Length: 502
Ligand code: BES
Ligand code: MG
Ligand code: ZN
Image 1: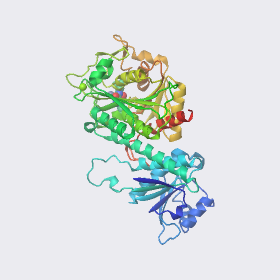
Image 2: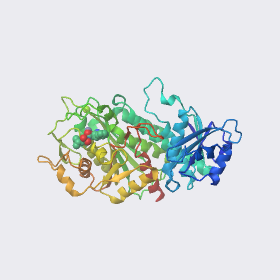
Image 3: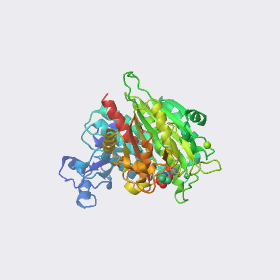
């Protein structure tokens, strides 16, 4: 898909359709609506007056301007964006996505999107392009007939009338990098377990490292043994597929030797979670292919970072393994020793994410991490607590947690903090070892984080539980169902903000 920037005016654009944003209950006498009404030969006011379009968020109205010679495109899509004072960058991204999906359904393949926002035109152009990329992703990769994406969008023009062309164009480029990287993560998450084994994840990471210039190291099981990663290895024991620990590192062009800060992302890469000997019920088990979304998020985010080239170094770590039962698999009651030396009683082999993250976090620290954000489809309990609207954030560093919540708000991803009082750690005390890997029925998302906290000494740490938000059961006007790509944009916003402080 080709993307380009434009500074208008919209009437001259050489595309099949132009999509414009309209606020809720916007009065037809504003200059903006007056112009649109004029360009449409009175149709815009007619549609608004009829009450069939009120500008509610996600609402659309598609107008064919037959014989009209004022708007070159001759097709106009009104996209409702809700209340004016609530419309922000996240809203502009969704407006663009809604426009693209709605026009694609009509078999339009060259589209101009006018997201209409005051503020930084480079930023608005970027989020509109991101929204367009997110919109065209469909999970039906293996369908051979009647594919959604057979209606293909070839060209997107993001128009910000009267803006500086250079700013719009640089925003478009940023948006392309971020949008493609989000879809890269979504594609990985969507792959069946058979096509996205730990080795496949390592191969994708290698391709990214080679194409965009990151350093990469992949630890095999022999090296994990040497490092004493008994916790991570206990999960892969039952599988024929060997575990892989993927390390990606971005180093900025001009390294600042005095800077000892190393922001690190650590993501759970369980390429299929059957539960192991503590086998899961069959219903919905097919979805456990997306249990590697945290790892894919790290790789996708690093893919964008390599191209955006921020002035700070970033480390990405993805422990990857299957979780399967077999005669070799770890059994409930077994005790394993993590890289830090801590012993863990494995009560439930289905609480495997925390076991692999424990060693991955220890290794990130060994590589110099000073700040760790880990992300994982860690607990079913997070869906009970927060549904598919908010991801949970917990951790030991309140400024880092606040930064995640506020960066998320800026890009339209919601994170809600859950408490992590020390009392919860009592639930993971073991009778036989230092800790155990489950904390009972109460506060499942919190006790999972309390487990990870045992491996977060000496670093600023926050944990994102994305089990409820990484997969959408229903399509939205701006996004298909399936993998959502949650957290990529938030992590990139955090990097952008940290870069601005440099
Ligand atoms: N991969 C699951 C969590 C999950 C559930 C992700 C639903 C996405 C959707 C995780 O490994 C798991 O099985 N957690 C257990 C922990 C329990 C045994 C303490 C859970 O949530 O039931
Ligand atoms: Mg194995
Ligand atoms: Zn599990």
